[in-house]
View 1 (spheres, rainbow, N blue to C red):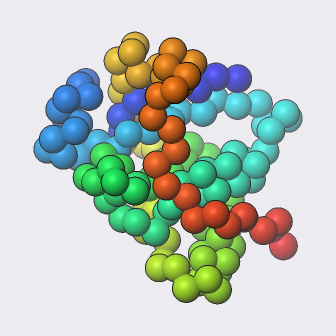
View 2: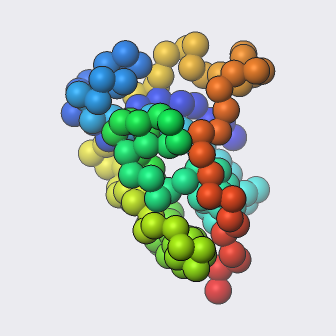
Length: 147
């Protein structure tokens, strides 16, 4: 239905991009996805998540280093939690077969982790900047269909 980018998982209220980039706030840069489960499944959203970044890098994505670049899933329903864990385990087996490190993605309830909308110039960034910065890093592997 809609997406936005913002910051979540930190300790300060209403952080700015400049504050988040210092690493002092503890926030991760996030994408909030509001979706209709009758149109797209949690499994499909998480497939895109796992396949479009490298969840083994800890506090980084490619050349971008810092806690704000860590891999995080904050779920809002028990179904989302279950599917996040299931897909993490499935993708982790694929990565292990190819000698990649363990997945470091944090999976936790969104409760207690307030989401703060990023500044307007970050929203729909690639639409505003078609030649702008794109995907940082990926493993190149696909999430298998769940069992």
